[in-house]
Each structure stands twice: as C-alpha cells, then as structure tokens.
Image: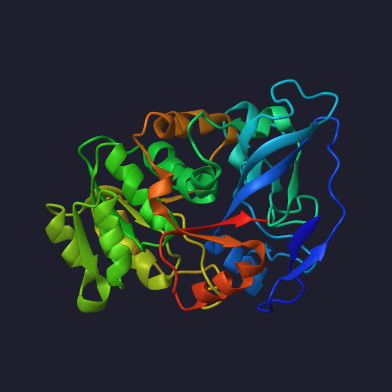
Length: 353
C-alpha cells in the first residue's frame, strides 16, 4: 500500500509502498477514506519535541486524523465489524489501565500516539492498524462524511475536551481563543455551540473572518493591537472566564493568561516550537493574585467521543464548515511546508490516497 514516510526532518515526505498492516487479535485495520493534515504533523515533520522526549523518529508513517471503513478485525474484537464506518483517535488507550478505566484514556501510560511512534504507524496511508479496537474505535454517525469526520481528528476532539472537560465551560461564559488555525477555529465553533460568547484572536484577516462565520461574537487583530489582553478584557466585560492558547507561541500563551478575569481558566492546547522548546515564562504573581488556573489538555478520551459525535450528528457542531481544502497524498509535503509560513486556512484533508 502507499504511505507517506518521514525520511528527513523538513524534507518532503517519501511516498512509497509499504506492507499493509494485519490486525492484532484485539485490533482492527481501517481503510483510510480521509485524514486531516494537522499542525502536530508539522511539528513531527520539523523534528520538534526533543525537549520533551517526544520527537518522532525517521521512518515513521505520519498522519493521525483518519476516518474510514473497517476492513479487517482480530478474533477478539466484538464492537466493530467489517464495513463499519469509524473515526480513529490519535491518543489510543490500552483500555485496561486505571486511567482508561476511569475515563481518562487520553493519558494512558501504556497507550499509543497514532502516527508519532513506530508501534503506531500513521494514516497518511491507504490502511491503518488500530490496537484495542473495542476501546478505541468510534462509530461514525450516518450522514457524517469522511472528510468532515477527518476534521474531527485531533482538532475538534482536542477543543471539545479542553473546553467541556478540562475548563468545564458553562453556557453564558466568555471565551477567548488565541490562534485561529484549525484547532483554534474548532474551539471557536465548539465554544459557541456550548453556549459561550467567543472572542477570536489572530494576526490574519482570513482566519478572523472564518472565526466570525463559525460563531465568534467578536475578534481581535493582534497585528493591529498594542495590547491584546486589554483588548480581550474590554470585549469580555473584564476578562474571559476561559482562554485557550491554540498556537503554542510564548506570546499567545502569556496573552491568553493575561486575558482572564479573576478565577479564570487558561487551557494550553497548542504545542511549542523550537523557539520555546517547551518552556514559556508566565505571569505567576498575577495568576496567584487572581486565583487563575493553568490547565493542560491533550486530545480526548476515546470513551467520550460519543459526546462530541452526538453534537455532530444533530448538526450542533459541523466540522465540515472548516474543511477548506481536499488534497491528494502526494500533496501533503507541500501543505506541511505551507504551515511553516502560516499559509493555510481552516482544516485541510487528504481524501485521495
């Protein structure tokens, strides 16, 4: 089968034939119909993560936002069958550890990160193997296309987990989203769907326009503002209840924290680059003085996908609104390179494998 393989950091991915996977006894193989192209793929392609012992090795098949059809199952699998339409989490749990059993499989100590480690080859490929299929695979609702399902990928599930589970967002609260790439725009749409009033922050006109289209009640052009936190606080009657850094730059992280009102909650979902190397100085005295929470958030537990899929099924959330480009597997390298200059909008999806 064809797959896109990381053969040199920053070099074009190599499209080559690799052996198709076989299912483990408790696993399944999914024929990939669509796979999102995410900024986390860009981080892997750039070789980031050494500072967190999280760099992706050369030889890895990238891609971690797939949707498709089950084509093989192991002998122990009971909840999915050949032909089922499914979406695949990137944070795969083993289903047995205390985290998985308590509903926190996104931080499973013995799990796998799809597309980021040799034991979990990714989905920029015609087929992808999924371990512990009964625990990890989520059935795709009727009427939801594969392209929209791939947009769920890690962008929507990460945004939903960050807002609904980590920040415990309540209807009527004010939310600020710093960075309007695919993840940030998903957070805008989900925040609006959960009943919050959302302020979107970016330096580019097109993403801010898209943010307004998917639910932002106000926007801040950070390139034209001398003081982004003050601008956000002015638009949120004294500060956001919840603020999200969806980019991972030191500036956006600090702006997010400083945009909060007293007892506000910052959620960090953007990963840092080699400029920060995982470390960002924070206004800790301000955080202490005003009882501010700083929360990390990673993906979403596979056992809670049904919450978000229900919102997609009834039209409350529409990931297809953010799909701006559909490309072929051979185009992935060019689209990753475009991310280096922030020259992408919304969510781009591979649909021709």
